[in-house]
Length: 525
Image (cartoon, rainbow, N blue to C red; front, side, top):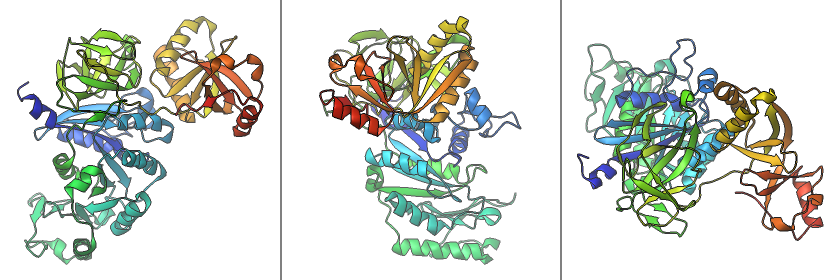
């Protein structure tokens, strides 16, 4: 590497983009890639008419439905920084994937729709970031449309999310009258639609007003923005880099991802204040320093069929410490087994290139033949520790599933086992008949499963809805008798051959506990 290890590590910026569906998350990802020179032309999510799709939405179903259903990992260089973006699905049925992705980042960018304000899924994801102390940067999007008043949005941010905010810039008008932004941080005004003969950035004077003659000065929007900025200067929160790093203060940027306004200014400022790779906790409550000589990382995502022609599986690793070199040998403590990492890759969505070297903060993909699991630690040398467990969610909805064509039984089982290892759906089977039952947090996961079985494994499946169930695992499995099961308490095995009760509802579970007090049930969470 041209830089030394310290410089390489401190140049990394690894973050996730979170939001409610349709707030513009994938669109801003495209624009960031465009500025990073990773793509020549920014596509849009809803690109069906033009045939131009967003780079980060590579899966066929994402192109058809115009939503993200899996986290994409995207990398580019900008202004001396190596940027790793994790574009996460916004749909609540896929929040489990997003929660695990948030374990692999050092900062989060929260997208807010200026017309809708803070939405339910944003609140959930924000809470995960807050709980983990992840610094949060807010981009209030779609200023090119009519929306809520900026002060109302700032108030909502602070009241609903209970986090203090600092406006890095301030909009001048909105919708068709969106004239630009008053850039408080860079002390300039950025014009939304500059004429061919005028500068995009205009200076402001010591009084905080436009320092040059411009027609904007006469507008009520400019005068209102000046009043708002004065109010923020006098009564707003102070800019505090330390509080931003702790996740106690969110810098707020206004702009429009679709029209590419304010995105580059946001990127440059974000990279200035986003944290470099941070230490990570082990199960023994010890921190692993990024600059440690020991190479270590953890698998936070597994994706099957990124290249359907090769039926491949990729395990995504967040490097926590040290340096990765292709061909090195690592240990997976869960298996007490060594692996030589010869087939490794880095990504621009589904475009990939072999990676020979990487450092703490980077995300790399390991080709997986079925050895790895989500949450696995990979370490070099004689070190022996495991990182803290990743969140796993107990499914609430269940379906019985089988292949429509019994001749495709082999492809059916292979497809299910591969997709189950990605972590979005969970696999169960009945004790004797070995009927396949799938569990998920949301209905859309079943639709994606059905689509992918057809598209990637050429298997048509039949699904019979079982409705919602309460799943509980058993501490003392040896004491469980099959006679304890019944219509309201189905006894099955999970993919690790552990016994699980699927109760009809909470009442049925309490009845069971009263009848069999010696059976110790537990939730997977």
